[in-house]
Length: 281
Ligand code: SF4
Image 1 (cartoon, helix red, strand yellow):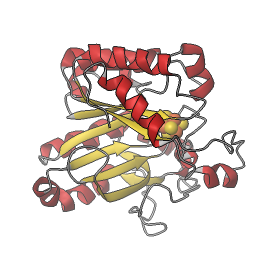
Image 2: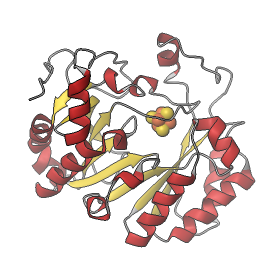
Image 3: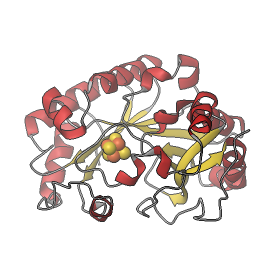
């Protein structure tokens, strides 16, 4: 039995995922971490937030997991890269937290979104938590970079009502420079979800000088449109809200001089998606 850390300090609930949280799992023995990853009976969470209207349909509770194998240059939550920064939370406790919101989420046509970090770093926990949500009648969504999509069986993908899939850039070399990893797995998951007709929202972060090449965006738009299951594309403007975390963590932040994109360039990016018949915001 894995000991669950007290949820009092800090509380599992956060106002938003921009709270810097470090070393919350540092007391968990390595053997217990391996056991948690194997069974999914415990997860490592940055926090739960409530009342989100941007992480899927309706009003949502969002679970922010800790752990990500990517190193996006513009990541606004680098404290979630390390799983040991997350609060160890027993599956039962997480399910009970969600049970409290069950009726409210239904009334507000919302649900639960598992985000991160990268939630599929803890794929067994993710599957068990999402399955429990489905059993409670809660709509489920997962926000993922897609890199570990092959960890989920087709049956397990069936526990997810909506996938918020991040596509960072189309160019393979640029993708590696931007994230540290190849794009192939992300596209592979996109194709699998297309074959299953699982609803997908594509998330694309527009970073001036990094991801705003129009030919590149047009390639993403073409691929996205051909999938046939993408309900919308969200063009998310780069911002500097996470910079302080890079500084506090002693990480080399290279985007100090990058400004948020102009409204005109956001609109141009949206138009490239709309030109392929997609809904883009
Ligand atoms: S995939 Fe998300 S959490 Fe991971 S480094 Fe990139 S932006 Fe950060």
